[in-house]
Length: 333
Image (cartoon, rainbow, N blue to C red; front, side, top):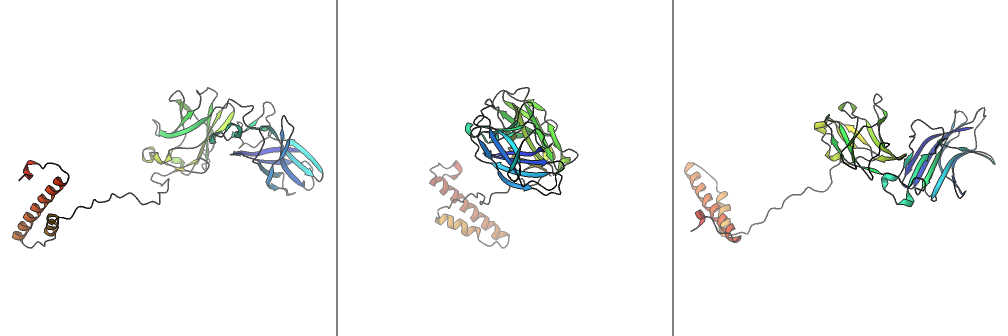
């Protein structure tokens, strides 16, 4: 028998694991597959809850997906369990894994959890098997980074601004993942620019020719991988860059055409300044009446203009008096 890690994810306090099993010269299929964790120090055993399994005898391999949301604090070594009736076989999981599984593992450090709630899925030295560090016991000095915004570099390409909790190290690495464009897809190591003591700029390989691509970024610090969520897409200068950035799922962004709406406008009514209701006075009423007069012929037009001008002058004087402001010279009588 052999097992292969197909996927591992960490969401909050939940660990999700998918694995496949191959059994040479087997007629039929095993009765059950599962994922099991062994506590490295106490010897406790925890079975993951199976979410889905594929045990068809016609396929080249059998699949299982399972998760666990309440692992105790400590280091857990993971196994794939193959069951035939009362017989069970445990296969250490992780040494063989799909190409889509990152060698740096995955963690929930981007959520800034409490120390006891830190979940770090990593691969052991040597064999490279999968283990879960709940509480950060082995990896205590975990470095952290978070995205703080976006900007445009000198080539009009996107640059993610990243703030680190400590001074950046030469061993720190940042990766970009492109999906939806086969000619540029996959994982790419990002070049970095030192902008400050704890501020980095990550140059993203995005252009206007990548419309429709989905982009995710992660940091690999001290052998621990942490996803970086995009921040500031609503302020992205799409016209200057030649392409827009719209928020996607799980902290990713989608490259869109300039002018594409990236956020739904709020359903609240826009602010409209209220007009100040002025006090009705005989002169104000006279001014309103003068404005409503019909104009017929040149002579009457000049007369109405005279009346309107005098009414406006008297209204301005009333407003200055109400505000206790001395009127200018031309208004004094």
